[in-house]
Length: 353
Image (cartoon, rainbow, N blue to C red; front, side, top):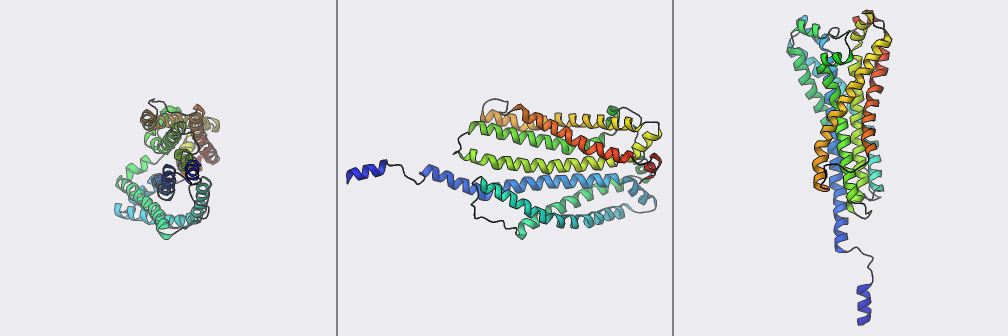
């Protein structure tokens, strides 16, 4: 009997030991509560930023139109009401159209969580009204906030000043650097989303690679969470990239009058395109530089705590891919849009609203 007891206590048990059981329970709790919160929170933040940026840029493009309304006796209050109502008319169908793709994306994310072992194989996606209402409400509130802020600015500008500010660019015949300097407010609104994308991508990827360098054991909880963390990062980068592309396309379309004036000033299409490419490269370089500073603000203290070194662990090609991807996004959004705008006759471009 004593020998049997000794063997029973020395044989490896198929059940998890207390420490392992605690890790399993902790991992399950993270999968049920923390991961959905991280996914949803980051997604809401990025989407809200994208909505605000897009709506603000769109309303900014309409300063000339709003100034004309002011010149025919429309009051600032009527301008603001008109902009808010137009925003609602566009926002409601857009939000409704995004619900079905959102459910499909939820299925993809749930499948990835199940593959990583953080969610049971039998778990099914339930798109309840609280989460749907939260996502739709956040998008609507962001659109309304952007409409109110932007319309207030547009309505407060005197009509004559707004008309002059919205006409042909002041730097129509200058070099790309002078052009960016002259259009600093517009350049900032375009570079902002790009800086955000570079900062988020660099910061999150290198923090995760630093964490991976410390937890290489596949049985470790942090190692099991790594694939999901990369999924979160990929989603954030994707949403931010969409915001960047939309912002760049809208900003380039706004410059059709400027391009028309340059053509009438004897500039050729090739010269205008060269200016656009040069401005795009400068904007990308500026955004990468500032985004790198933003990323360093998170990776340096994180690495100091984790490894004792200010340098984050991770391959250099990741940073090269982020910088190259930012440049490609800028060129892919601006060059085709500018080429399409240059197909319009210069006189017609100047007469466009």
